[in-house]
Image 1 (cartoon, rainbow, N blue to C red):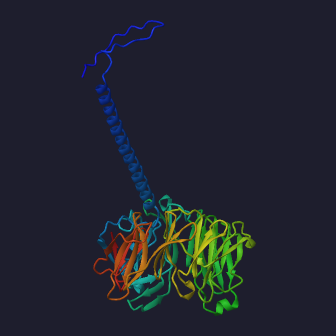
Image 2 (image 1 turned 120 degrees about the vertical axis):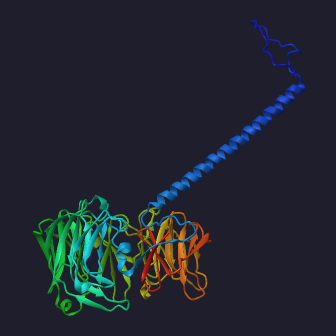
Image 3 (image 1 turned 180 degrees about the vertical axis):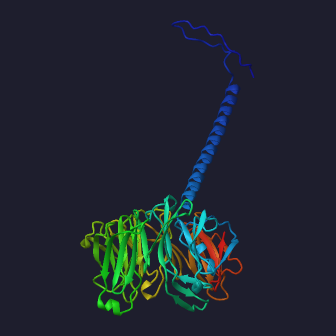
Length: 505
């Protein structure tokens, strides 16, 4: 092949440029160069394709990892499960407050001697602890104590408890003591009931004042609203958090039949945004302003049914009631307190344990079907029929809303629904000898907990991909674990007799 040397070319105006035959490449040289160009072009195209595919796969992997990380941060999602369940720390029935206590701020821990200690921060390593009630001999040795004693940080219900500077505790030395595993109990009358206010930074006491007969409270804007029932009257009083001085009192008189018949329950007071929600001992609801002015007092007056409430997914207040047969119904309360604008919804509230927000404004209720509503307007979206029947003693369904799908645990297995249309995408039934009892996610898979329906069944946690009902793998429950639940983002197992509770990972 001829050497490639640079040629000197003289250009003359008006005349064509000529290249001598000796300087022109021959045919074989042109063909070889053309072949090399095609090879280089082909190799370049392949390299570009590989690079493009690699970049695309990288983008897909990045998006998948980002989606997993985003879902993992949603309340109720447990840490990643890797194919084997390991048993961690175990707790006795007496110690369950460390597992199932209030996840907001801290927890009250009952001592074997009947005393009460408040711990601020995580149960396994609290920032501080302070005894708020000394030993109570009448409660000593009880397996558990049913008592109004409770602590709450002084923040709005939707705020981070870590932002609180004070924690308010209602403390009483009375209660119902459960003495043994057969449920034998005894009532211990209270001799002292008081409010304790503690500094969240150190646990130092800021205030203590008496609150006789009080069974419920909520902190609000430097006040503590306390409630009690005495005689034929439910009384709610707003008191200064540090001094106990009263600023207003609201009384609800009970009718003659409400005082002669067993009351449906204790009074309660709670806070929703800037509204106080009072539940009377007859089960009726009233809404008050922070200054004690009545906003609504007509809720439940047309029936004897008890009422409860929950915050909706878009911030609307949702009420719930049950008739004498136990059939639930819900009401989307009008934001302007106009009763004519209330919207009644079929079924009882079905709150998802995990909701990643992928179906905006989704409100779910359940009776013989699962109903989807617009959480702002109450307009019906869809209903999925024949999943369960709460009117016949059924329990509330376990639900997860993930990636635009609604996963529902029913008595016959798990159903995946399109969150926008209600269309059934897939369903899974338990194997023979099993019953599905638990539904959870670790952001990587959907998990269903199966327990033994008979001796032939296996107790295990089965992983499913989100988009189909084919199992990926399963994990057998550790020795001594018969049931598994998800609680506050933790996986907890316990035995058949409810005597030992174990953290699982």
